[in-house]
Length: 417
Ligand code: GDP
Ligand code: IMO
Ligand code: MG
Image (cartoon, protein in one colour):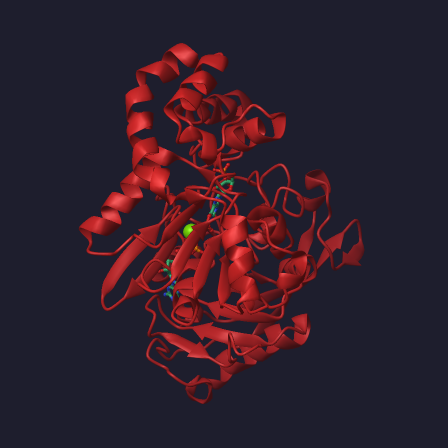
């Protein structure tokens, strides 16, 4: 089966949108499998910039079918708004399919997200306030509503009545019903559709949202999102056989960023962090929050390698490291006097680790128009080789700028039969 799974290996915002859009030029299907509009995926080509939150990043290729899988939580009002925005920009949106089994984010979930964060006070997660946690909570509690029911007005009404917050939701009923009517033609059994596509050897790209370290199971719990962005979650969250997942591309920023709260070992602040934030335009695509900055962490990357079965890496935003001397790379942690190479599962333990760094030479040249690996400065090549050597995962893509054109590809993606 001809698939590639694109996953974030850090705390999100690694450049998954750019990579997915790039590979979508060769794909027949692009599939989002988890998360909701907490995601913000930026795509740039022909001088124009787009931000997607719910719609898969294959939408810019007219022949590509874009699927929103059963593992997603979908805010129908936000989806209608996003569709409208794309239409206004002249982007055709007809090739979009929504799983009837995907769960719906209702206005009450946004209110609950706010309340939950307020209640946690200084221990808050720093969520995107998009209602993601409460929507997944309703799903797990078996009190949610799926898209396949949401699009039938009487079932939606029945659901709203069954909820404690029904009177509030009722005031929004007309807006929700309008969204249900608009989305109805797009809702179907997407698992069947994808299975058929796979059997016909169509090229299917799975687009992760968030990143491995935000995974509910394998991330820095409780400072995580409420779904699993890993490759292991693709089959469950799209309804295709697990055997279909074999090629997994780990999208990795050349350094580390994080939005929201929670510890990460290589974080630093000050002038250098400000310089990197500025050079990399490190402000959240969804919430505009300034992203926290840190060095590349290979303990994290090796963790992502294991839980995702990474077969290649895309190293993103390498251009942003121009003029940073030296380049530090975390290769292990110290905890209680011991050197460790894995991520402690307890957050109490994790926030006590000390990073062990190696230092590499930086580069001064502007690499944003480099088209071939050979033309990169020597220190940049050494940096990349160090990542390959210490993870054992080959680099397939190097990104030197936000645009589609600023991409160096070293691996033939979608060549497998
Ligand atoms: P995603 O959530 O993983 O899709 O990533 P985001 O779109 O939230 O954040 C990545 C940011 O980096 C966006 O602003 C991209 O336009 C930008 N970007 C992606 N690749 C590169 C690159 O190689 N260099 C630079 N300078 N910016 C990049
Ligand atoms: P993309 O797909 C970066 C973070 C939030 C918060 C935590 C939980 O653009 O990489 P949530 O709203 O999901 O309950 O918030 O997860 N978070 C992201 N951080 N990129 C994202 O998506 C994120 N989606 C959620 O900041 O720390
Ligand atoms: Mg993002």
